[in-house]
Length: 443
Image (cartoon, rainbow, N blue to C red; front, side, top):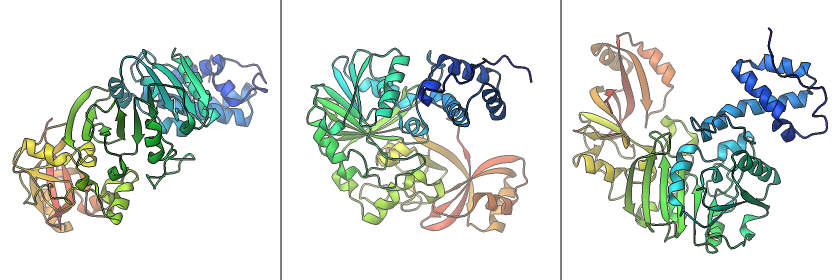
């Protein structure tokens, strides 16, 4: 296949490390041209082989090429830097803050002062700090600092860097931001949310040297361990909760308060809710806490939701005209009761411990995904199949909560044959298994 791919002189990178290779103008030019011509992996490998690259060099280039569209989408989208090249590996990219949350968090900072980006990694948080702030990146990993320096320079940002243990930093900066490490190796899923480096206790000690700051924690981090005097914010989109942000000192405009925040893809605030912090809501038994800590890595059918274990939770009631799923930020922040009752004082749960809300009125987006109930029955193949036939349903999306089975196998057993589509919930009502047929309401 003819192609005008850039030609490389054999051995040109023989004495350079892979990062020098990946950041060279020729390699980046090759990558852009390969993207524009939509070359597949075999074609890319063939061209690189012909131009004299070793197996290791070809692997490094191709691994990097797989990351380029991912970091461009995560950090830039349609912004003017959408064609920028950054330096990162898979783990650094996964742990970085995305543009939607990063842009929203930028509004929490003052317009002037100095900031230490502790555990800076590839620079995901510094990318979105206000330009008026003086920024210094700190990390114990020199490789991460190399990424950070390259990325900041590539985006025209002037920053300082220092390789050291962030627990020993004392440079007189006004503020700090920190994203404690959660995974040591690529692909490793950190089950123990308390196993951070540095620990939250150490972050609290660090905070005492600054006017204010923010710490990014996993959404499932035990809130009872977060100290008094801080502001806790759960942030995400319509269908996820990605950060538990803890604000310290001057950045905590509402100390001892909890907020839930939903942003759109551009970082614009869509909705927020708040409540005074209540320590009584944060104490869980060890078994339930362990289940909650594991939620982020589990599929919906296996998740555990704490929705009915305190005095302030919604009452139980029958299946109503509508059934709604609260946004994950509302569940994590224990704010969905308040959000529900503001919309419909008669709303209630249909089963204890399961985050499905029944209501007479449709609950609004973005706080809720709301569905109009068409019918409901016991979970038995023949009975459910008859319900689908009665409503002419041929295409179903099966949602599971409180019931465990293989969704694909169940859909095959049901053999829906109608012309309409619908949502089929397999869940519980008053603890008993129930199938609910519904359609998504218009936003």
